[in-house]
Length: 56
Length: 280
Image (tube, rainbow over all chains, first blue to last red; front, side, top):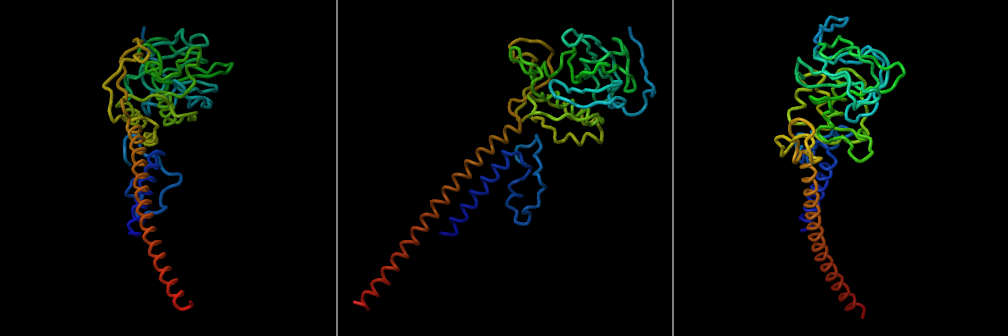
């Protein structure tokens, strides 16, 4: 049950973080955000998503 | 009257060129167009016909050069150069990118350049993007048409003006591809234009409808909902969903911790009972 709680908390944190990224206009997909082999490999500052997409 | 005006370079080379390439200029404010200060000659942006050299609505003195572009991806669109400029062309002149259409006023000042409609009004004004309050400077904020012209000029090699804020309004559907085509390789640089792509487009709107009356021609469509706006709404919903999931996780965690603490209390009670048995 403890592991399940941690998993749910991680999912909530990830969703909230992705929503924040979308509000800031960052060009990062949910898949990229949770990809364990793509941690901290984005450009800085984060590229802005094109105006012709709803979800990067 | 119509006359062919050719410049010193014979009209060869790219269709569109930087109008300020022989002048010394600094980019200023982006409003309905883009402001430039400097000195020297101003060339035509590309092949076209001069439709106006004066417009009483512009200060000082109503100097306003309106060119209808006749060739290339921007054929049919109109550009204007106004304010502190001395015209060197007449109405009806056929020009190309080697033609000098005017000079910065010797006393200095500002030349505003931008997109215009058939009557000579800036497209930003026709689309209602300019500041409209009573007594307000119409150019008090950047407009989308002004920002677009700024990008075009920068793509051609002119200095790029800095935007003071996100430009107001939107560009009609199909506007940007022709700008990119006009710039060729340099068009890639405007892929990050702060423009709007419509999720729900308006097929067309009459310029001036916002103010409740018609002041110009139909100039294409606008956005009922842009994709950028839709992304912002979705982001808020995702954050709300994430918050609910976090709350659910916290409840499960608390329940789990409660079970654990009950178990610890039970174990402690047993240890205490054993101690009391041995030490009483």
